[in-house]
Length: 121
Image (cartoon, rainbow, N blue to C red; front, side, top):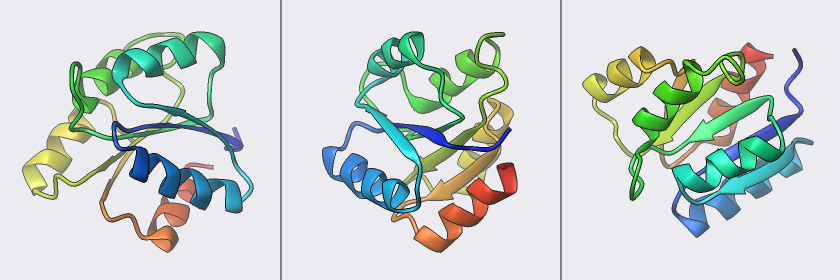
């Protein structure tokens, strides 16, 4: 399934703007959410082709949301790329065990992110 729409989940307005501009510039339709609850509401309205997920957020964190989405039959086919400042190997391994398809460390390098998205396409 070609990736055309991306949901970015991050509690940082700066990060949302940075990633949104980067993805819009590359031709993707972008929706944003500032929390797990906001993301779930967005998902009820429209199913994206890809989710970029922050890990450290108030309330439900990105690991928890990734796990619940990848186990939900409605969204299990939507790949999740964790996009986080957590740069330890144990964090990456744990994220992948929650169902993430890939992992990228902030600050996000545009070339690296676009390469990861293309590999999922």
